[in-house]
Amino acid sequence: MTRWTDVSQQKWIIGDCMELLPHIPTGSVDLVISDLPYAVTKNHWDSLIPLGPLWREYKRITKGNAAIILFGQGFFTCELMMSNPDMWRYQLIWEKDRPTGFLNAAHMPLRSHEDICVFYKKTPTYNPQFWEGKPVHGMGTKFRKGGSQTSNYGDYDIANNPTAERAGDTKKYPRSVLRFPKPHPAVHPTQKPLGLIEYLILTYSNEGDMVHDSCMGSGTTMEACKNTNRNFIGFEIDGRWVNRYRGIAAQRKIGDFVSEG
Image (tube, rainbow, N blue to C red; front, top):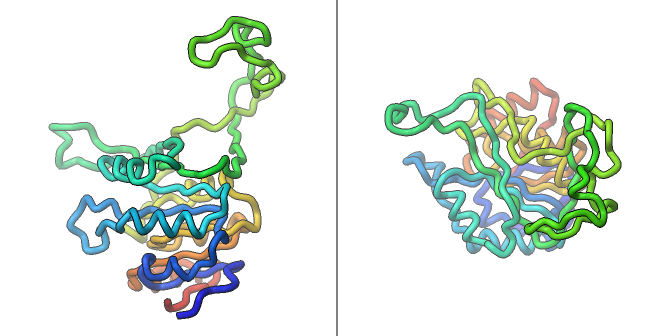
């Protein structure tokens, strides 16, 4: 296989991401979104990808201000965070409408969320996805310029507070809990909602940017990139999902961008 010199297109490559990542040009990716295997089941597809070598490739292929967004749950979230503590910044929570864990419901709470870990080297593109709410009352007197200091942040400057001059505005800044219904019926066992992936893409990239997904599954990230006018390159080791993707692509007129690694 030769190195891809032009990745400014929609492309899904069938193959092992650890074998294919070295062929992505250095510094060509604006955003990584990937739902890596959590290694919490006995399914053959749920095998842990070595995080050390994966991070070396992610650092190489991404631009300096790229965000790297990885899904996790439970102990795997801890593994993700500790695999690269220097780049870990914060977590988002995906709240599901369909919980899991009914076999243990008498012993522990049902699981209704997954973690979304956000990593980056430098401050990335960030386009807040506002939502409509009650009008903003403005900034309280405690936080006006020259007002009381707080033990956490000290004196506030009115010019640097985003709510200072927004009295009456109904736009609300995004929060860390994201509520999107699970796909039903799902094509892939760990499929994420199209709306959730579109939300992340709109937040952490701009039109025309290059997005990468190392574990494509049913192709949700590719579809989200097409819907939001982003370029895309992704990998999927299990060719079984390709035929399912092609069926969905034909129905939704997404296009067929699959090629062999």
